[in-house]
Image 1: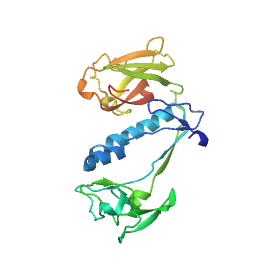
Image 2: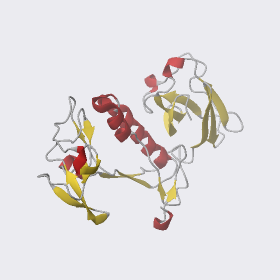
Image 3: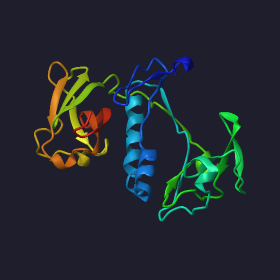
Image 4: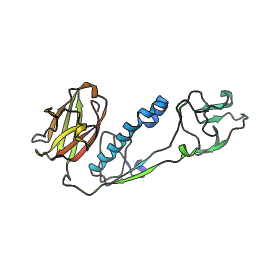
Length: 255
């Protein structure tokens, strides 16, 4: 990445907007491999996390964010159809592709490996797989696997809240310790499931924690009493007169 002029940005940080950076977000592939059809339960929350991360970076001063992925996938609840490729004919075998033994004889499609043309790769035909019980797979040449997205997001016009930045947000138990710049007593902080929806706050309307103001140093602490929300995706919002000026994606109780 350094050779390409890119700086790695930890997922918990927003980096330096004057540079070119690379960061990662989302666990679609991990959930797909681990949970198969149950990936459906995760799609909405994962997309929400991606959206919040994009908004967080733009709010932190990045002029644009380009979202890319390395591959798509096949996903079929109830299992993808299996074709037989005996293990003794392969060196390695995955769901959608395999490395054949040099002496192997079969009728399956073969293509050269991109990173080394001397290595042939056997592909499962159609949407088939080489293993039993597979609901999620990739590595073949269907359109769903090979066509990758590229989305470009740019920052909107600067609002009246320009310059408000969350400089720190860290959980200590059920307490979220926050730092805001500038230290403005007219600002308020809240934790919501949806940044623009006040009714999605995890705090009750009359909760003294709801929309707390920072002290003279720009710091404040929000305390979450409901342990049932721990581990859930949320967003810290900084407001003035109800307008969201800054936000930061977070997982409740986790750094």
